[in-house]
Length: 441
Ligand code: GBH
Image (tube, rainbow, N blue to C red; front, side, top):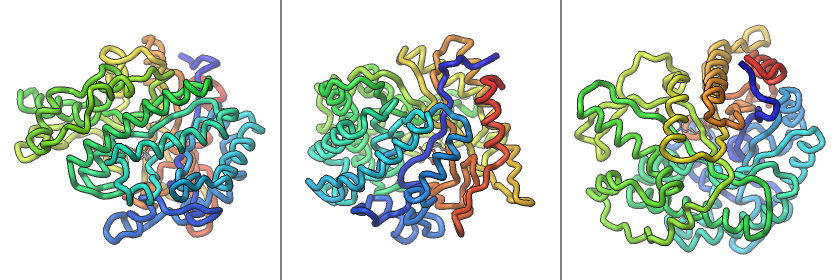
């Protein structure tokens, strides 16, 4: 078994999670600055003011990426650096990404840029954020600037990272910024994010630019905890919540009827969805990005709007409490292929957090290595099955700001000591390097 020469090995990060420099060179607040500085939102009230200080240490970090030997680096652009205020374009903010991209280019590393990895400018949130259809225009304006200034350095563009998180997790479950608990708001946000994706893809084509462009979804295959009919309903609804709500509009031109019915028990207004929107949302992309972490095992819960809740499972758990489930990764991709699309697929994130221990200056992260190997084996197998996975990005290069968990969860191949910003390569770093180098496991 081996990976072909043109298979893209990569590593991923995102702006708010690593950059720091929260108030430098004209950057204003994002909703994550606001959220993390609000009591009771993020563990230990950690925030991204400094994070991995990547804004100042990007050279050292690109050097690490080079040493790792990956073909590509996936990062995201901080919107509030580019448009700190309404109508105010900030060239200084753009220069940071140009410098980063030149550094990557100089080292022969392909750049994959995500336009939106959740750091919405606070000034847009103050105008209603993604809930307001009019605000999509700001995203189009921002994307246009990024395309004009950066396209020559970019290998692939990703419009959005994980719309499910930016909508439901952030606006219905309240766990991410802006921290709302309002299903109606979440549904609007999801719709406007999908619509903005389509608009930006259309804009990209209109500008005559030619790099591959796509979207990244977080997908999780759902399984019933028993053979009972009610648990099958639970699994169906879980699939509808995480996966189908995004896959169907992108690839089938509508929202899933069963989910619309479920949601209409709690939400009365669906007028923000217009039939014509689906033409835009379905704009032809060049690839589909999938972030895969774990399966969902669920059981019936009559108390929940969605009629499901997570069920007890015997699988090994990461420190996030997520099942290690590489076989289900294959089920997921098969399902996407069978039901939705023949587009090339990139695994734009996959990784795991563990309680890493620094012993004699070394982090021997055997659990992460095992997770990495098992998931890469699954990718190899999928390609043998003809499922056409074109690349794999490990999440993440560095330990970083893990959203609601602050700095308490470590996903990196490189350990970061947040007291002094020292970077220490974990054993998994060398293992991944070796796999990339040999192009086989
Ligand atoms: C990604 O999100 C993000 O893109 C990235 O920024 C982040 O740092 C990384 O992953 C690690 O968290 O119902 O408890 O089984 C992760 C998306 C969506 C993955 C929900 C886990 C199910 C959680 N997550 N999913 S659970």
